[in-house]
Image (cartoon, rainbow, N blue to C red; front, side):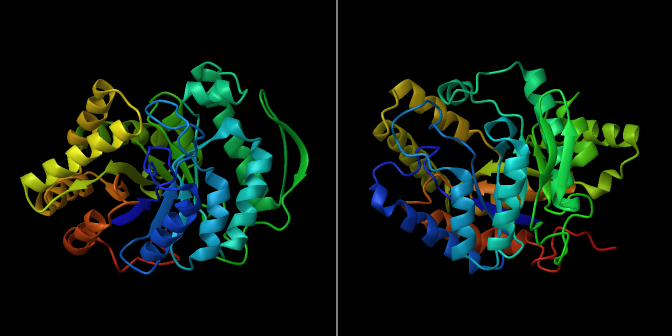
Amino acid sequence: MKFGLFIPQGWRMDLVGIDPSQHWGVMAGLARRIDANDDWTSIWVYDHFHTTPQPTNEATHEAWTLMSALGAVTGRVRLGQMCGCMSYRNPAYLAKVAATVDIVSEGRIEMGIGAGWYEHEWRAYGYGFPRAGERIKRLEEGVQIFRDMWTTGSATFHGEHYDVDGAICAPQPLQGTVLPGSKYNGIPMWIAGGGEKKTLRIAAQYADYTNFDGTLEGFQHKSEVLRGHCQDIGRDFDEIVRSANYNVVIGRDEREVSNRLEWIREQYLRAGLTSEKAEEVVHGFATGPAVGTPEQIVETFKKLEGAGMTYAITYFPDAAYDITSIQLFEQEVLPELVDREEHGHLFHRRRH
């Protein structure tokens, strides 16, 4: 398996209480730490502007600004967004941004993209909030523009929602030109979301990676839907790496796990949530697949791996404050699961 880690950027209220002057130091320090450990394949950020589970005045740092900065302070680890919202930026412009960051990072960018869902920030930033069908259609059009920009150096596309006429991407990304990359897209494309009729069909057509439901039953079901779409369009299902995101709450014993869940509750109360809302958040963490002792988490991931989930992107809610959870995961979970043979710059290219 491969493993990625979300860098705390504030969106999930994971920088509360830290002075803004220290935010970049926290993020950069953790990124460098992950970069130095070969068992980690990638680091990730979210593409959001307002905090969750509700908007507040707490910090949320912008994803692509962080991508460029993280690319400059690391040298090995891959860099991704899980996931970008297509409608927040014109896709030709975003393809250009990604190409530039691929060069800054010397060929380490992953493009995570989806249709978007956080209605409050859509409306707050003046994007409206189109119906789901329109948001998904924008996703479908946008990924075609990405592919053309990165693989040919320009795009001309006249769609229902996007219209570009000779948009130039010079220079092209390093991946797919002077460095190995996705054979279809140049920069590896992650299409996130589990919509069964449309989103997973778009993934079958264009994705190098998918990212959807991380529970065993949910992952198996979405995988079969994706397989069906691949069969319909003639795509090799095994070409697509299937991933999922996991909130990690880890402890050496049940008591330590319980203490970490209590810390999460207190953290969200400090951020200003009501006790009811904080309890709702804690319940979401407590019932997730990656909660428990190292042995329990390893067992869960082995079952998921058996179902084809070969790339786990992990989130540690206390990462900005205390790295002992990450250390325990590194010491007792990663060695049991990580695939070192295909690790490194070319990991996204399957060996035959």
